[in-house]
Length: 149
Image (cartoon, rainbow, N blue to C red; front, side, top):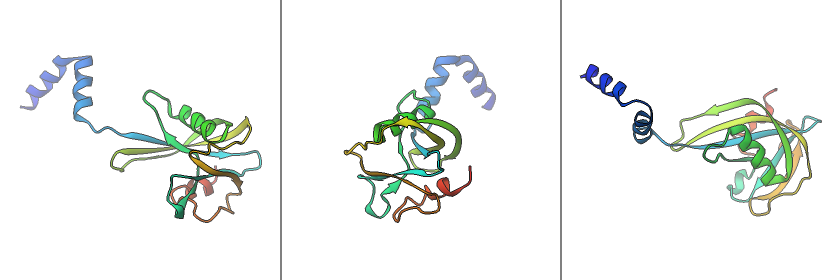
């Protein structure tokens, strides 16, 4: 039986194989986070309007759109939420195991722009020293902030 399946698979080729894989595999959203630091080593935290009140402070975060490189997602989300421009650095986390979501986080450095929050999503944006984070910071974001780069 295995040999038959292997021969059938090989005979399908390219686009048909990809379609079969797409139909039979899990689909995930990709949440992308930016650990944005300024020249003084402070980290940018946002108080998110739509997050639970007991953990509203967190890093700039959003979902990748179809076909978007994850580093581009960081640049886009930071710009949309804060008006700031960043340069994306190294990958610092890739986590799966969520039901329909994969989480990706990158280091990023402030390179310009003027801070202005998107009032629909963001209540407040501030720079914090890594050892002086506000109460109600997302627990999952704390290790990203406090781990040395």
